[in-house]
Image 1 (tube, rainbow, N blue to C red):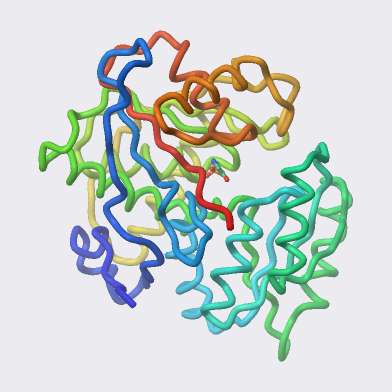
Image 2 (spheres, rainbow, N blue to C red):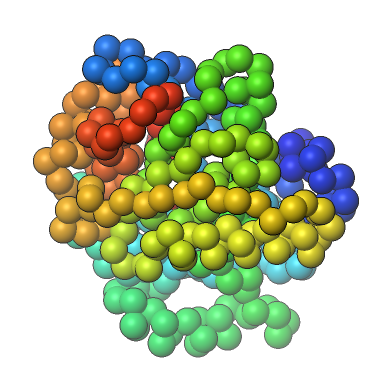
Length: 324
Ligand SMILES: *Cc1c(COP(=O)(O)O)cnc(C)c1O
């Protein structure tokens, strides 16, 4: 298994303190999307990132989180998500490869075919599921669940929703360094805007921090698709700042980075998991360029790509992975 990240090459001091395990094939491809009525529109396709038929953006967070769990000597991680959680499933499937069990507290979300399928996969993944249904009940139950799943007095490693802890955020700091190398190699122009969904915020926070560290001047536009977490610019900047602190504490040296980061709530519709006509339209348009989107995250982000006033080059980060 490849355990060297671009971040380790950039900051050799963290190689020993922030372990990494590569779970996909890097760099992920970039290509221009033509014929969609937008000049210089590009896609970085993280949808194929991962292995074993399960991919997407959560895998990049697990590349740091699972080795960190091992470093801490824990065999169980405890995390939370909605019943359709891509994150919980990715944690369960990849955790297994590290000999780590996943315990999930699940919050209800509007049930549709996608959510039912996802629950099926969660049940088959070997994860331990607790249906805590609402956010307050999940918060109330969490200490008991942590206690119940302790082993030899050692509580599970707690991971927040979406894996967006400061260490999880490093996955997209790494992806931004990867993007900077692709720009330097001439694979694509330096994006003026990078657009992607904000679910739990780690992806956007990591991209913004990574772009700053890599010297890219790109602005990151986070398209909020989740109204259950406070995810404004200040929250995301705070999360990126905590990731920067982890890097520093573990030995990296750099000047305080200037983050170029914005969010929009204009594509959220009625809330997390609720479809919108703009997202449905964007899904059809994307399909004509050979890009497959799902309704919860990527379709809303791509709706912003198509209709927000953004000068090119615009880069859409596709976060949706294969699901088999
Ligand atoms: C989780 C997820 C996102 C959002 O990423 P965050 O880091 O949680 O903001 C985007 N797209 C897909 C397909 C996801 O599963």
